[in-house]
Image 1 (cartoon, rainbow, N blue to C red):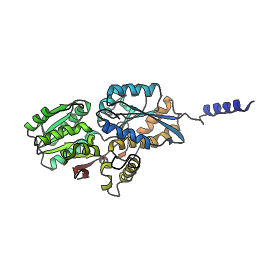
Image 2: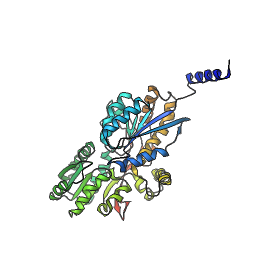
Image 3: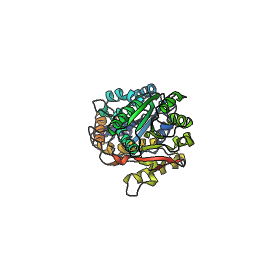
Image 4: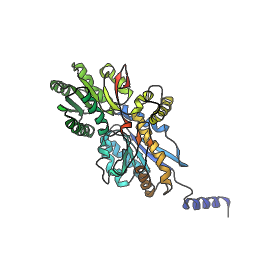
Length: 381
């Protein structure tokens, strides 16, 4: 038999025997352009820091930009699932995009490690959401810390200003429920769009209600708008933000207008201030060093860290899935989903993950730190 046919035959036999495996493909959708780019760019950039080999298998990352548009996110996920036949997905950047993708993720039975803020993408658990895992703190975990800080500082009335989309709506639902139980009164409830250029009307209505504090439920650059408006109109109460602004870019964009902002956010943002005994510290500092080594000092973002943690979860679980099936098959995707659901005490840059069948976030109080903007930087309280 000629030499080359023998080699081809041997390769075919090895493939059938499961020795030669297909390359693992990970699809990524991030908003690297559009109004949410301040969040999406560090997520996209972080992909370059993820391993190109896991469990002895090569890993290919296919990154698409949804331009901050849920419709584009759906188009992208269809392409990743149908054309590229990815084994898992990371992203997208926004809650509306994640919710728009959910049906396609579930129908294809492909694990999604989402980096969005809202818990609505994983709760309440059902047959669709069982394919989704979340690497950003759930709203209720963050809201608990915010409400506790309000109570400890004499706040009795609160004005709420949030996005008029699932992010803002879910935040109001979570916060309002906890606030009511704590005895806090919400005296204003205003909404605005991610692309709005002015929120003067919402700001004036909120100030007219005379709240002790204002809670803003928004993300990225658009979150600066109502806070700057409140400052401009002379509001003197406390201003709280969600972990949707957990980035140094928020401070760069807002300048003096965001000085004094209060937020419960991921520990990576204040990694150097964490005690040495905190297991998250070393992982967070390692991520920061790698990111800033590639993209420049002061460029790190907690949003990128959520993508990094998605990569850590895949590094932990892909070897388990490889024991049961080959990449590129439905059996591998199922095995990977099951392995993710069993992941325990996986230390990331943003928290420690312990998943269960009913909890696909798996983060606890170790994943939040109450902090403020002081002297142009985030500092823990």
